[in-house]
Amino acid sequence: MAVIGNKKYSKQIEHHFSKYPDKRSAVMPLLYIAQEEYGWVNDDGIQEVAELCELDPTHVKSIAGFYTMYSEKSKGKYWLQVCTDLSCALRGADEFHKDLKAYLEVEEGGTTDDDLFTVEHVMCLAACDNAPMLQCNFHYMENLDMEKMKAWVEEKRAELQKELDA
Amino acid sequence: MADSKHIVLRHLDIGKPIIKLKDYEKRAGGYDGFKKAVKMEKSAVIDEVKASGLRGRGGAGFPAGVKWSFIPQNEPIKYVTVNADESETGTFKDRLIMEQNPHQLIEGALTCAYAIGAKAVYIYLRGEFWDVAHMLDERIEEARKAGYIGENILGSGFSCEVYTHLGAGAYICGEESALLNSLEGKLGQPRVRPPFPAQKGGGLYGEATVVNNVETLANVPWIMVNGADEYKKIGTEQSAGTKLYCVSGNIQKPGVYELPFDTTFRELLETVCGGPPEGRSFKALLPSGGSGPIVPLTDEVLDTRMSYEDCAAIDTIIGSASLIVMDDSVNIAWVASKVIKFFAHESCGKCTPCREGTYWLDKVLDRIMAGQATAKDIERIDDVAKNMAGITLCALGDFAANPIIHTIKHFKEDFLAMAEGKELAQAGD
Ligand SMILES: Cc1cc2nc3c(=O)[nH]c(=O)nc-3n(C[C@H](O)[C@H](O)[C@H](O)COP(=O)(O)O)c2cc1C
Ligand code: FES
Image (cartoon, rainbow over all chains, first blue to last red; front, side, top):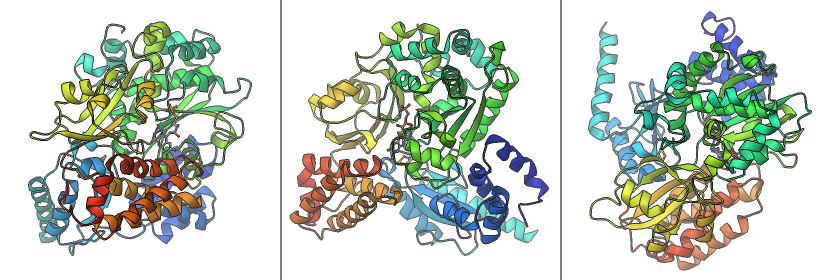
């Protein structure tokens, strides 16, 4: 596993560097690439991004720590970030978040034993008219209820089971 | 264009999203405004926008044309940065523009770039708008192929590039100087000003930069086509044009509605949005998301026009027009605790009053919410909030103080009931 020298990313990396007059500016897009490669932003990723952007690794690490979308620990295959901010909470999001954790039997920020789901709550995601809603690996799922969520969770579990059987 | 109902959400007049460039050109007169602009003197474009009275839609309402005129024309390198960070609680309009009518934003941004002579436009999107950014990239590519972006655009001698840049989850990056730091690959924390972004030394990479909100720029094509005079006919004297109002919370029909600034809260909340949920009545309104002063939803407020000047007269702001509605089932102390959690989480930690203030407000509010507090605690948080306001590095400190000061001012009895454990049942629990 690597970001540097990986054909999968070379075009993207080149594109990002072409956007800015300064290599440093590519640190954020490159951290996303590192996260894609390793599943989270680990030390190897930090090191490689620092090398590419010609920055100090400690600076890259502080950038990764500052922003919530860079994950500093490994997560489940589906990272579920439920909005429990005011507008959503006025439409039942706190309850939805609680019920989802109970259904998956996880604590806040926890991951299910099968490593499929991580659940945490986040602030407003700019989809307040479609509450309850969540972000699953950077894609929105909106107008949810527990009925829909249960069906979705079971579908993903069945997919995993099929993979294991195969 | 002039007879359509919408200036920004043009797709609603057409009946479907305007995604492809050829649809935008054919069905919405797309890029006509830009084509007209590049044949004009740069200063004439700025003058037109100035004369239109267009004000910034990101919250502060600063006149857009005036901001553009601050840019020193003789500097060799200048930038436009589009603020698509959209992270204020209750705000979901910019996402809609970018998803449903993306070229109108690109056209507006290019017109601004031409007027100030910028060499590049950076659209800074909150990281969660991952899908939106990728879609915008495709639209940008389309515009480039058609000759609206690149070298010597439309034979005008003007050259400009347009790029997207994704943030990664930090509310503070919506603040313009923090946004610029973030775009430069630094920590997304505000800068000490002056110099301001429009000045040499204060903008992106130290170059003079215009930072405008998505909605602000999406108004520009219409103004270029129809003229400042037509634009000024819409809205009120000090608030020209239309506004995208985001309505959420306890309301029958939440959503984004584009209406002229002279529309009243009643017309929007009762007529358009169908009023509060069945069997409930209106209690309170946050007209500008979590950060603006709350108001009780009285008849007086309902009959107020949703303009900058009319809202100031009732001791609140229209800001980004993120209307969060609370009905009579909601305890307002709970609202305050939700809002302060947001700001405690989002304070960037750079300046002490904001970092410490939000932390302590959150702690004491937790106690109030647990029914383990006294009237003294309510006075204490009121005090802390009042001491924070006006002394922080950026407006986030004020944004955090507002909900405390104004919720206590209007709904002290809710805090007392909560503090003394008399009220526990809550919306969402
Ligand atoms: C804490 C904070 C957060 C902000 N967030 C946003 C935002 O998400 N979007 C936005 O357009 N403006 C935001 N602003 C306002 C910007 O600093 C700036 O005024 C705006 O982008 C200027 O554009 P406009 O004149 O077109 O409104 C924020 C300001 C502060 C202090
Ligand atoms: S409050 Fe949940 S998306 Fe805005």
